[in-house]
Image 1 (cartoon, rainbow, N blue to C red):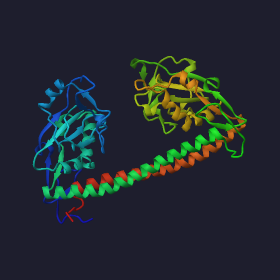
Image 2: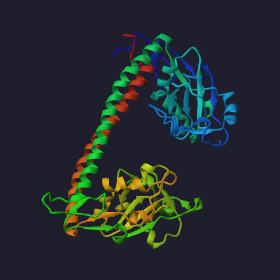
Image 3: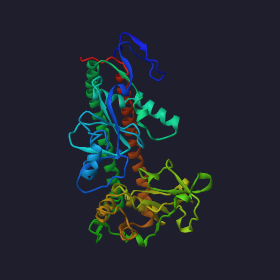
Image 4: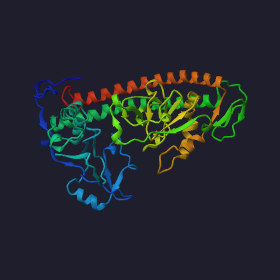
Length: 435
């Protein structure tokens, strides 16, 4: 795209040059008010006023079913200074710092202390401001403050001093319109890639399900398994409950005082250490507790998430391998220890397991109990056939996983391009016109 005819030095090192007729202003000169969220412990009720938290703020929508409520009397105290209106902007101040959302709805709500509400004056369009908050220019300032002060919290005095690049209102409208259009195209491409990922995941589960319930020989005689959700299985296979094939071991309970560093402790494997069916070591906790031998991980173990605030995470599992050996696992995890671990692992990743798991989870407790896990039936082939099936599934799932990795890389590049395009437009590195 074209560039503007003339540029000037912005006087800000990370920003560089900006169009000559643009201004550089601090946010406090572009707002009527910036309001902190509630500095109190809210009382949640079944009916009342919506109470927004950082976790409720999403780019495309707000999950109304998950938003909590506070009593009207608590809200009335907040509304005197908050009074959210269409066009205001919500900004996260901690945790996922920098996440922002422009208010496009008219219902009343209050906000928690981890959010702040920004009300813009007539110098800036809220649509343009939202895009500036999503640009690398704003993120550079946010994370520069975090690194400098080693905190994960932005106070209002920091937020109001953010630098903004400000074209005329006419240009702001043109830039916002241009980004609405272009980002809509990019988001449509991202959505297609996300759909492809979902289809690949379905294909992966279908391949696993067929192999662990029907085997690899399409001409093998079949029999009724006697278990409704298993259906017919090869005639020479058995049907066994997991409690007869291995041991179910609950995880370690420890206190905050037991947490230490890597050099002085044992790794505690938790739900966050399982990603896409494999162990990862990006969010580790180490403890100096005495670990019972039974809770030390072995090469016969499958690590299972048995309790979690999110229902979707219950039942996710990974094989204990290499770096996961001779460690331990947390109280919300379960280890299933069995000499048949590879075949059982694939059975736990089948549609049979996933569909039945939902029947045992209640609306109040997201927990896979040892009793439920132990009574789960799987189709059980002879050992030699188990080996052939797991080798086949290793190869087939690896192919699908490679395709998923390629799709994820494409999504990552599209998201990088998305942010780069926003940044280029709102800092004047490319010229946007009404045409």
